[in-house]
Amino acid sequence: MTEEKKENHWTLSAMSVHLLRTVDNNHNPDSLVGEHLIPCCGHHIDHLENNTDFHIQGCFTGINYWVQHIDQNVKLKTESKTEIVIPKKEYEIEIINFVDKVEEFYKKSKPKQMPDDNYDRTGYEMMWKEWKRRRTQIDTK
Image 1 (cartoon, rainbow, N blue to C red):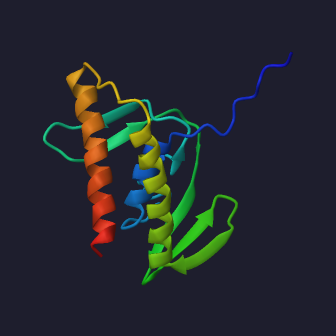
Image 2 (image 1 turned 60 degrees about the horizontal axis):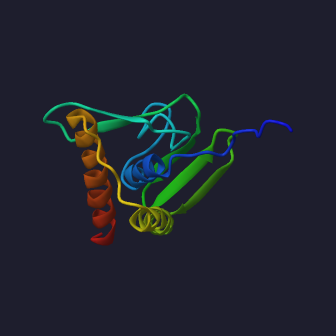
């Protein structure tokens, strides 16, 4: 029996936050919303006390494509240089569809066991607060 090759394993919660960040922010080598737009893993949330910013730390594996806002459009460019420009509203709708499906999956899953460590629990709570805030902001535009 051969060992199963591990591939296409992605952290959907971190990906969702990163995608929500790109609704209002560019994601490129000079201005990242996360190390990878689509990270393999997100096993730790770093944050500073009295600050709402946080970083989801993972391994060095993931997928990036670049997001650039141009007027009322969004240009998406893969690492292999394939590009597409779409209306910003269309981009927002696709992000909403994706993150809503991920959130629905979490709602149907067993309840999350909160971390005992205060630092880890605060990071987890910060992630969901940003998720909800950014998701709600899209609806109010």
